[in-house]
Structure formats: C-alpha cells, structure tokens
Length: 370
Figure 1 (tube, rainbow, N blue to C red):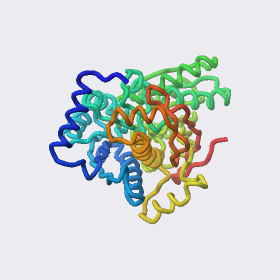
Figure 2: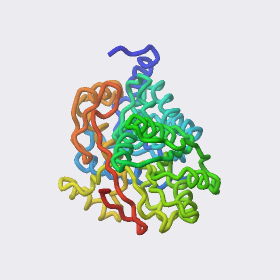
Figure 3: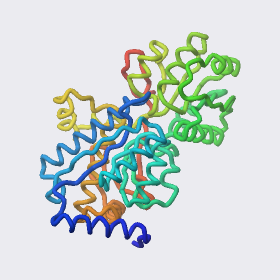
Figure 4: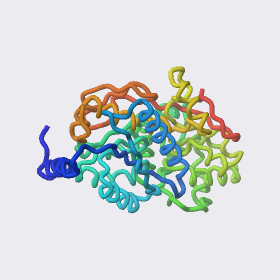
C-alpha cells in the first residue's frame, strides 16, 4: 500500500507520540459520532446503544490486543457543520477510529477530515454511495447503500402493478439520493412517474404538496428522507382523503413516525435491514440488551455493534492499531458479526447487504409486507 506524504507523517507522528510517552497506550479510543440532539436523535440512541454494548462485551472478553476500548462520544445532531466540528474534536482527542457518522450529509464532510488525518471510519447508517466513490481507503460501512435499498423498494412497488407513482424527497443527500434510485429503477421497469418533487426539511405545512399528490391520482407515494416530515405528510394526506400507499426508507422506520402520524401510519411500507435481533444466533446478545432495558430491534443498533466489532477484529487480524494496517486487514478478511459475515469490497462497501420491506402499523409494530 502506498501512503501519501501527509498520511505517512500522520502515522509516524502518532508513533513518535507514543514513544515519547514511554510506553504503548493503555487504551484504544473509539470515537462515536452521531445525533444526541435534533430531529433524528432517536437514531442516535440506537447507534450509541449498539456501540456501548459492543465495547462493553469486547472489554469483558479481554479487550483488543490486550488493551481496553474506550468510547469517545460526540453529538453532531446530524448537522453537516456540527459534524465538521465534531470531526476536528476527534482529531484533537487523539481518536484514530470512529464509528459514525449517521446521516449521509454529516458523514461526508466529516470523512474528509478523517481521511486527511489518517483516521479510520466505519459508518453504521450512512447509505449514500457518494461516500465511498471518492477513493478514500479509510472509509467502511456496516450498512447497505441507497443503490441497494432504492431498487428493493422499487421492485416491490413495481410488483404491485401501479399505474402512477409520486416520488417526494427532502432535497438532502440521503433523501434525494434514495428517491432518485427508486425513480430510476421504476422508470427502467416502465412504471409511470407522475411527479418527482422536493420539500424542505423542517417544514410543517405540506398542504400544497398533498394537493399535488391528490391531483396526480397516484397509487403509490415514495418518500426519501426522515420520519419527522413524512409523519406530517402522512397525517395531512389522510385528512385530505389521499388513499395512495406511502413508502419510505429506513430513515422513517421508527416509533417517531407513529407518534407524529398516528393512525395515518397504518399501512406505511418501509425498507429496513432484516430483524437481526430475531436471529437464533443473536438471542444471547438480545437478552443482554433486554437486561439493560434497551431495545436491540432498531435498524442501527446491531449495525453499530458490528461496526465496533469489525474495527476490533481488524486490529486483531492486523496485529496493530495503525489505521492503515487495520484498513488493509478489513479489505483482506471476513468478519463474523450479529448482522452476518461481513466481507468488504476494495472501496469499503460491504459485498452484500439485504433490505426487507415491512408494513408499519398504527400501534408502532411492523410485519413483513406480503
């Protein structure tokens, strides 16, 4: 592997710092960056729950290379500017491995800083393909891509033989990206797209959008974005007697959609990772979460757990805590995690990942869609 001068200087600088301290570090810092505040903090709760459990269990088993993992947690509120601030703070804290960020729009600018500073990042939730299209060799994921999730949603919609579909997005990297993937797949399948329109994240009044949807007389409405806006759109659409079936990505699949939309959430279709917490081999882990009063069923809990695992296993396989050597080990190896066996492509994306279509219910439960 060829290192840039800057990266080589970073690696050498870290080694010199350790030598100056007189001994190897007694602990390995794992940065965890995600939303503790803001409209999607519920997803951050999942991320921090999963990473904390993984760090605790790894330490109980003896740590990594004889050293203890220590979490350095920071709130980026899923805001790109705050994410840059957090990334710089991680650098100042001497963090060399990060689990995060969560939102694609925050992950991308933060990852620029991590790459420049020689920090390895594993995101458990950011699905934008753009993150791994830049040739950065220190970026990995434990989640699939919009280019996987979008077609899964579109395939389901197309199988229902709709006459017309409306596609709406929040104009952000994640929402518009996945909406575009759905649109392109549907068009390839010959499904008529009646409208492709963006809304502004944070808006509350969607009456004009609802009117357009109603006038378009569509069978399905696909929404790319997060639950706060879709919850309001759903509620206002049902009040206006729009009877189309709504569908969205994993960014809408949580209890927040139910609390906002109420009965209008009934029948919403959502693409999510499989129910990893229900796998037989994960029952001891599921019980460990339950004993802490935590819910492992959220879409990003076990992907976050797995992100810590692959970092830890990468260190073990590399026999090193150097991020570049660990990155080489991640690309060369396979890793057993609660979300399955992970194998990485050269660009840091998982070789395979499955998204499943669920039907949401007004009581907050979900069932596999037929």
